[in-house]
Image (tube, rainbow, N blue to C red; front, side, top):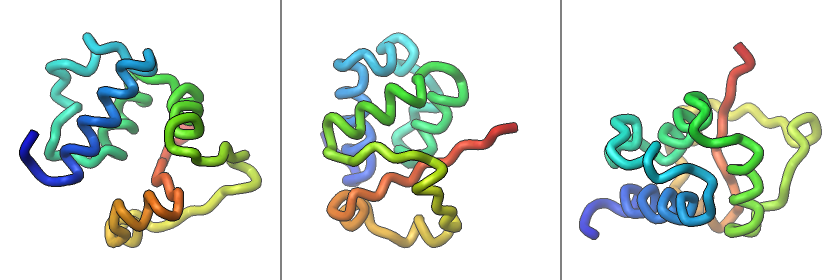
Length: 106
């Protein structure tokens, strides 16, 4: 697969999520929101927002396959401006187990 590393990462992680039953393949394939020009965070946020992926299953997936520790959102609540997160390299995030994830109640 050619393309930039972010596109490859999005594809590989989504494929693994499909293999594990986190997201159904028919909801990912040909979905205009699953676009390689978008970041993985944007794609994942839309899949959760649209009810295609369950937020808790996604969290469990990251704990299981990437060794991230589960967190309690009341204990580990950190708000970092999106412009700051965009300046952090995916490699640094991976090494330091940072998962940029956002959600809104309303």
